[in-house]
Image 1 (cartoon, rainbow, N blue to C red):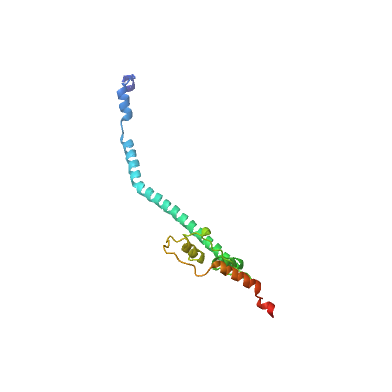
Image 2 (cartoon, one colour):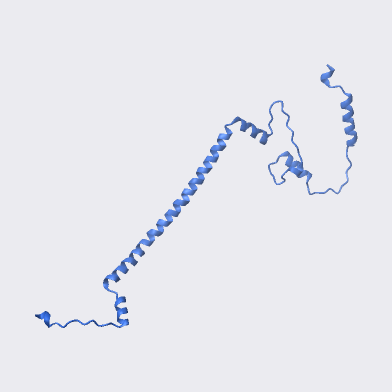
Length: 168
């Protein structure tokens, strides 16, 4: 009969401050959960940082590997071009001024079309540098030969002289 002796519970309204205090009250479980989260974050952060650094290094290495592969492909293409006899001939013509038997090579040496910053020591570049020299001579010098007379002499000799092949 002890249950009949108890007085019935009457709901009592709590003030706003008490309700807020109950909600904010931290019990031992919530404090331990927060501590575990903070401690876990603190312990994992160096590993996450090293992971991100390693990923960055991997990406950089992959880029350098791709660049090296591209360079190797370019070198292989250059090597393959040098296996072609036509390419070798064209390079010999362009770089070394070689000609095939029976051909005549003409080089036009004009200072206007040359790049004066070119340091390849070609004859055309040297002539252009000499022609465009900034040094101005203050001396007056006479020509050794009269060029008009030289031209007339060559024209007359060409008209009068018989070629050696026709004389036979």
